[in-house]
Image 1 (cartoon, rainbow, N blue to C red):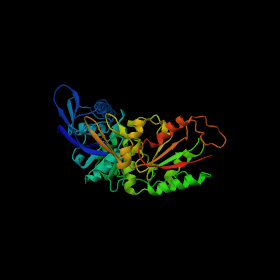
Image 2: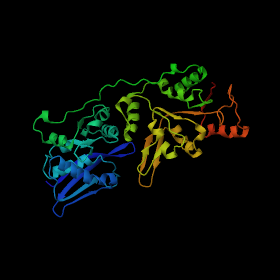
Image 3: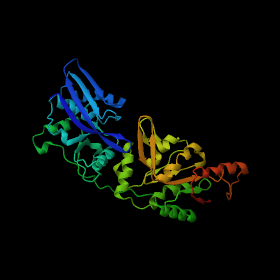
Image 4: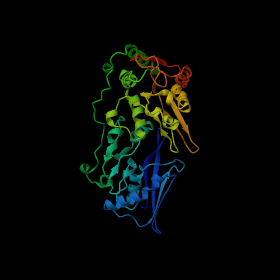
Length: 391
């Protein structure tokens, strides 16, 4: 057999589309070619796969190797295709049995020693398999097992190395095969910072409770040290507990950046970007579209401290996501759609120096300067609940 076909998935925004990894061996001068709109990271798999196969004790075939990632018009990126490419070469060269390869999907980045390294988007891939009605099992790196198993009824088979995966297909007994990782372990949820830590500010705390109940955006105005950030950090604790579907949505977005941890399961995200952040950093983008801060705050809180310091163009891009709860990023070659249902909490000083109306400090800002500074609170073009606080 000189042809092997395996299944994997490529990320396109929140979608994980199925990809066929076709490996063909032919006579001729030794060569290794990867086709199918592969990114630089995928093309570099040639060196990783060669070293992993050799260090695993297998023979790298001295033939003309062609790897096709179909469909050809779907962009492929990251090292997730290392594992299926390596297995395809071994199956096509008859070094491992190929009779059961069609029952699985594969994803994993290989080290030069053959160890499997974690990948981005494991949860999104597992979710896509369930939504497509697929019945295939997934073989993934061990570090991604808990994350992928959060999807109910997902058949996850974690492995630590290429050699373990090869042993799974060559095994003649069940004891020698990979064990199914049915469900993620129950993790004790981390407690949110407690509102009881805030002394005083009863009006502000009441306003935040109303905002949490009605899903209102909030603008906190007060001098430095009044407790604006302290209140904002404790705001997620006022929100209701996440449902399983909401938790899966939020975790899938985090998984796309590789930032999800099992300890964060059902914990509402809290994102606080710096005021020097660009519009792309907030809404997402790039040549390969990635989620921005508003998507990473999905089902949670986006906190914009020092609101007037954000550029006008940056705040303007938040208007549509605040209304629709989604963001669509379009590029010349591709388009990606990300969820962005978040609650906005912003904070600012009453004037540039911060001491306007302070009981003991003197504000030296001119009325025109104060007016221009406070106009920043209306940049979003959206009615917000404004809370003024004092020391």
